[in-house]
Amino acid sequence: MKTINTIDFKGKKAIIRVDFNVPLDENFKVTDATRIEAAKPTIDKILKDGGSVILMSHLGRPKGKEEKYSLKHIIDKVSEVLGKEILFADDCIGEEAHSKSSNLQPNQILLLENLRFYSEEEAGDEEFAKKLASLGDIYVNDAFGTAHRAHASTTIIANYFPNDKYFGFLLGKEIESINKVLNESVKPVTAILGGSKVSSKITIIENILDKIDHMIIGGGMTFTFIKALGGNIGNSICEDDKMELALEILKQAKEKGVQIHLPVDAVIADSFSNDAKTQIIDVTKIPEGWQGLDAGPKSLELFEEVILKSKTILWNGPVGVFEMPSFANGTIKVGEYIVAATKNGAFSLVGGGDSVSAVKQFGFEDQVSYVSTGGGAMLEMLEGKNLPGIQAIIQ
Ligand code: AMP
Image (cartoon, rainbow, N blue to C red; front, side):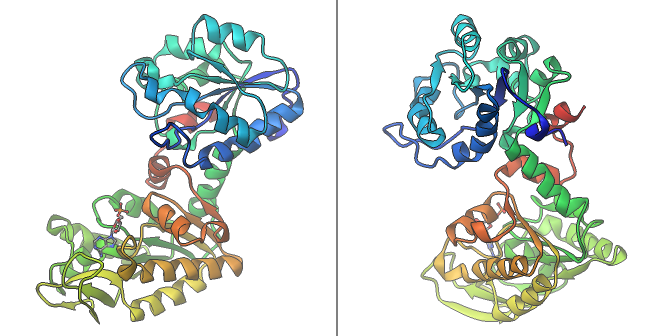
C-alpha cells in the first residue's frame, strides 16, 4: 500500500487532506477533537522528517463563504493537539494561500480555510484541484470519512501528483482493517449485523456472504426475517416489502454455507419508550400491542457462543435500541463478547454509524481491534464498492 511510511519528507511540502469536520458549540469551541487527534501521527511523521505541512479540510455544509463554518474557529484546538503554532490562510486557494505555502519552512504547519467555501470542491472541479495541488510537493490523503466522494481535494487533486501521492496513516489503517475482514480474514469469520432496517444493510449482506462463515442478525431488522418465516412479531418494526428479500438472503446463505443466527427471544415493550412495560418472550410469539426492542437472554447465549469461537469479527449495527437504557443490554453484551474474543486473538472491526457510537458510549473503543472513523465510506467499502479517494491514490 502506498502509505507515507517509506517516504522521507525532508525539505518537502506535503498537502494533506484531513477530516477536521469537528463539532463546535455555540461559542465556536471544538467539543470533540477526535478527528484532529486521528490525523496527528501523519502530521508528526512529516514534520519529524523535516518537511512542512499544508492542511486542507471541509467543515460542515456551508453555502458559499459562511463565517460560522470558518476553519479559523479550530486553529487553537489544532495547535493544542499538535503542540505547535498553526499558520492560517483565509482562503484555500489564491494569493494568500500561495504566498503562505511558498514561504512555509520545514516543521511549520499551514491550515487552509474551508474547502467547501467553493462549490468547486464538491463538484470535483479540475481547475480548483489544480490550484490546490500547486501549493504542495506531495499529496497525502488521510481523510477516510470523505474517501467515498470524488471531490476536488479527495480525488481529483491526486491527478496532479502522479508519482507523489500517498495514504496517511489513518486512511492506511482503515483500508488495512477492512481488508483484514473482507479479503485476508482468518476463519471463522462472523459478521454481526443489527440496526433498524434490512433495506439499509442489504448491499452489505450480499457483498459479505461469500466472505463469512457466520452471520448474526440483530436489532430491528430481525423482525422482517421472523415475520417472513411465519412468526408473530406484534408491533415490532418490519419492512413488509423486504420479506421476500429476507427469505432470499436465508436461501443464499444456506447455499454458500453461511450459518445465520437469528434471535430466539426478545425483550418486548408495550411502547417505544424507556419506561414501557417489558417482558421477555419467544421472538416468534410477540403479542399485538408489543414490540421487540432488544435481544433476549437465550439469543445472547447463542450469540456469545458464535462470537467467542470467531477469529475475525465485523460489527455493524446495534442489536437493540441501545439509546434507551432499558434496551441497551443486548448491545452491551455483544460488545463484551467481542472484547473477550479480541482478547483471545480475534481481529474485530466495528464500523458504520450506530455501532461506533455504541462502543464509544459503553467504553469498548480501546478493547476491540479497530473502530472505523468513516461512516459512509466504511459502509461503501463493506458493500464492495471502490472508493474514488482510494482509487485515486493506487492508480
Ligand atoms: P441503523 O442506522 O440502520 O444501523 O439503525 C440503528 C438504529 O436501530 C439505532 O438507533 C437503534 O435504536 C435502532 N434499533 C435497534 N434495534 C431496534 C429495534 N428492535 N426496534 C427499533 N429500532 C431498533
